[in-house]
Image (cartoon, rainbow, N blue to C red; front, side):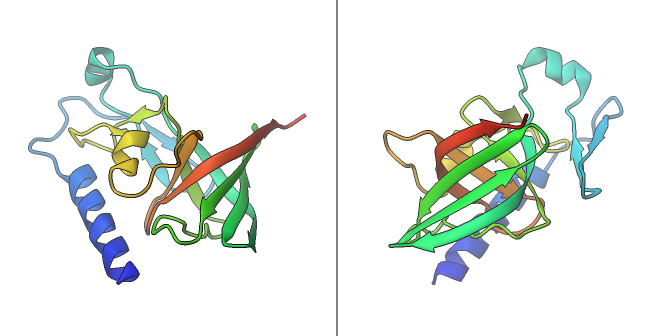
Length: 158
């Protein structure tokens, strides 16, 4: 049942973020991530209309499971996010090591490719879980299910 739910959510996510009624009028710029995956920046003309804050790209560093909680560390050259999720929640997925993930926080506003929809943390929360009285973070891979977590702490690299 959980796999069916995750597959349904991911199908809907792919459908929402990949559909477009017309091609962009101007060429788009692309930012290359460490794993050669491409994060497409929105059309500059459309970007002026809305305020966009791109997601940060991180990789999984450590995962621990204790007493029904999954704690994990993801990071990049800027710093490390220390996160947790409830193992009973459908969106408590284990990030794969060596794979890039986009970090969606409350200030992230991003348009994937030529999609008309803007992806935000709330967008992903609507398909998963909200950790009340916590700072929520979504980790979104290029493919596969996304995960929803609560922030324990963030540490800056020296």
